[in-house]
Image (cartoon, rainbow, N blue to C red):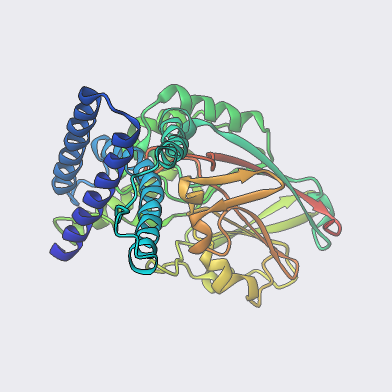
Length: 411
């Protein structure tokens, strides 16, 4: 623990020193430089203090959200500056070594002066993450996007051709701080007029009482003709907090499961239900959380009992690693899986239909949008809420509307 703390302090000092060099090269007004140093020092003290004040019995709070947001808003732009300044120092050292040792130019200063334009470029580029992160915590976190996706299946029952699913995931109600924006999102969901509404887990960050102020709001969600169904996510088990007793943790878990009833969702716990339309039916399967990096409570075999290989199946499973590790090759031939969990890291670059990138892709093979493997599909929702970093940059909160179509998918 001490080693990690010292490494963190060393990194912060390294970044602060190089950032200051850039400002000093470009800005010559003494009082501005002094103000910069004072503000930087105050931020470091504030962030360090609240890191040590974090209580794992309490978990995420508005204060911890603000602290992490402040740290990222300040640190990431300075990292950009540091990369440029450090790169220039490598060049200065290399150039100075050639002049001194090879050309024997003893009259030349070993290290050339810093070039102002390099610092200007570093500061200019640092403005991009700075302004992006500011946007993320002020606007991006509630910039809900409705994403519509048609998926074709040759074995879809005829009656379900055109059947629509509204899919949300990762509510994280403990992070909300704007009732007007959440009510707006409820209106967006209701406007879709889908046949069924599905929620794939993480109703809270850790504690059931985080959802209590929002129960009335989420009860505004209209019940579609074929119902509202949900499953649990990794945060719903209270595993990220220190509890006074196992009994307290178990009581919280029971309360979290009951939240789904309170907002009129049928919680599926390793079970399935048949959705009937006209003379046809599909199987809706819901598993508890199964995660490659988290305790796996999901049991796909138990959840699909009574479901045949020939049935058309929609699986709700919070973590997309479940699909990658087990579901996509499962003998029950599960045609469509709906997941969430990754949030797209709440930070990335996305140009719909052309390009998407996020650090999430280095941890999850399926991290946002639609993926296919020999006719079996998974759709990973980018998440409704936010966690840890109180914002979203590039990867916006998502309300997915999936339309099931009978036929072959067109490449």
